[in-house]
Length: 280
View 1 (cartoon, rainbow, N blue to C red):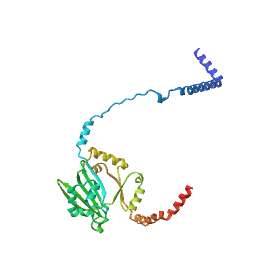
View 2: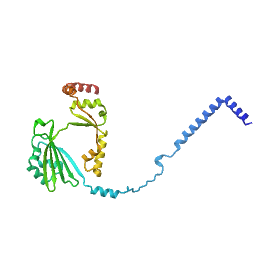
View 3: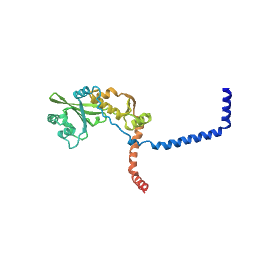
View 4: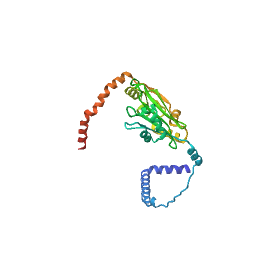
């Protein structure tokens, strides 16, 4: 009996399939129109009741962290270059490390006086304690002999030893090295071209995000994870590859570079004319 009824229903559906399809379409259209008509009747979200909850949240262990941070003896650094008008006082004040005893020592010491002799532009870095007390000055500038200009440099270190100051000058070997990361540094061809054009070794490191990684290292130094920035770099940054210059390619680039530099002055009037024509 049930099987016969099922066969009857199937036969009816087959005979009236078009009518059933039209009826289903009309039903769905009516449902959509109903939804469209009801949707605008929903209340405006801006008029719904709102409740503001304010609660003070204190991270666990925050007092201990603040105490540890306050007791940490932070070492800060600042760098600048010497100027033609500089003297001991102006340089120290610009670095924010002026100290009368340090100034007197630098004026009397033969090595420190070399900072203000010859050409300006000598690199000077000052390290101070968290209370602003100067701890060390490190200066880097050209060697005393022009024959060593491409292979060595002078490093002058002025350090505090108790209540006294001490200056040490040394001739250090100059290792020409360029560190690259991200972007074109991923291409061995790009690294070879740049190394040859600069005449220096290109080195890739294990970090490709220079700015973000550097900010994280500075935060680590500030939080006490490392004593200073050089220690943080030594602990986290490692060399992953080296690309040396090609001497023959370097000579070709050196010959072509002046021609490249001459392109813009030669075409500047053309660029200006094109700019005016495009604007009109």
